[in-house]
Image (cartoon, rainbow, N blue to C red; front, side, top):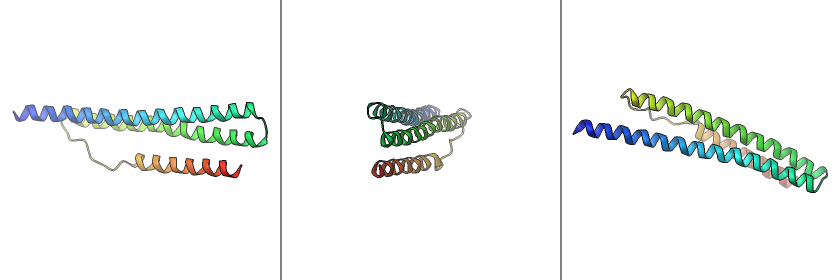
Length: 125
């Protein structure tokens, strides 16, 4: 009976790790898509209304979109590596380490900085 409970606990933990990875990947794909969408929107704005102001907005959007793209790619890679390590611990019969993960905080801070810089850019122009 105890072996069955242990096996079911491992399965539940593995499924929880998979759900967490999928949530990270969903968030990363959203950031990448938003980065591309933002750059495309401001490019179409530049084509529809050429001028110095829209050109400046377009260049800023490219910078912010590129930053979101890079952040999204990092957010795809690092959680995948962490998931692989945790699943490896689980397969060896070890308990995956509970740790504070710095990527969550780094992503929130980076997105906040991107939002503030984008807002400042829109308010200045």
